[in-house]
Structures are given as C-alpha cells and as structure tokens.
Amino acid sequence: MAERKRSKDGRKETEDYVGDAATPGQQGREGGQLQRRVGTRDEKRRAEQDDPGITRVRKSDERATGADKK
Image (cartoon, rainbow, N blue to C red; front, side):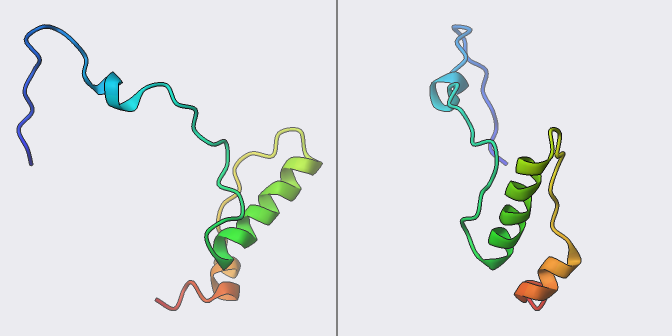
C-alpha cells in the first residue's frame, strides 16, 4: 500500500477532489435484470409507505434473474 504523507502547510487536499457533491438517494432501475427488479420493488414501497426502510436483494430475485449462476 502507498505510504501517506502529511501536508506541511495544514491544508486538506482531499476536499479538492471529493467536494460536497450530492450523491443519488437510490440506485433506481439501471444496470440489469437484478437491479431493475429490486429498483421496481423499492419504488413501489416508497410510493405506498411513509417510511419504507431499505430494500434488499432477495434470493428469489437472484434465482429469477439468473444472478446466482456465476
């Protein structure tokens, strides 16, 4: 692993690269069958519930899309 050096002038150079850019709130339906399936279920839950929580991948999702055959 690369050795890290501390700045001598006290400046935080990480902020120059990272910044405060907003990150997306959810993944959505882009990326493939598995992501599309979970994204659709998540959008439905968010429309129906006030506090939907986290939508996770189920084993049935993996089986239906063939993602478990790697």
